[in-house]
Length: 151
Image 1: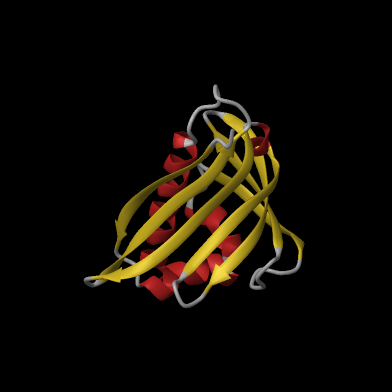
Image 2: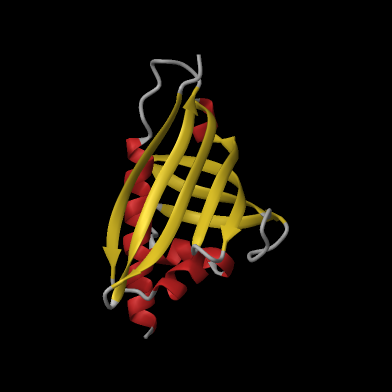
């Protein structure tokens, strides 16, 4: 039996959509500065910061515990969307598949960040990744603040 699910939320931000998307598209190394309480580091493992299919390793804190997430990135420039596909790390101990997407669309003078996680549980007793959606919200708010300071 497939245990595939999708979880998501939306966050209004002040940043223009291009600036927010560009953090993921080529400047992910700024994310630890934007959300230092949540993200401690990000390194390119294969490829580079900008290329579709590049592999990055994220170091983050989840519920007071240091964790690691190795992902392969897919970019959709037309829809200003970056999808991080889990290939290794702590999250993969509970989920057979894990994809988190940061998408941004224009809204008024700012943007709307659409944050989603598509996942497949390894077993029925694995909880939904609510804590990871919360992490995505916190990172998004931090990026928004970082962009505002750079103006």
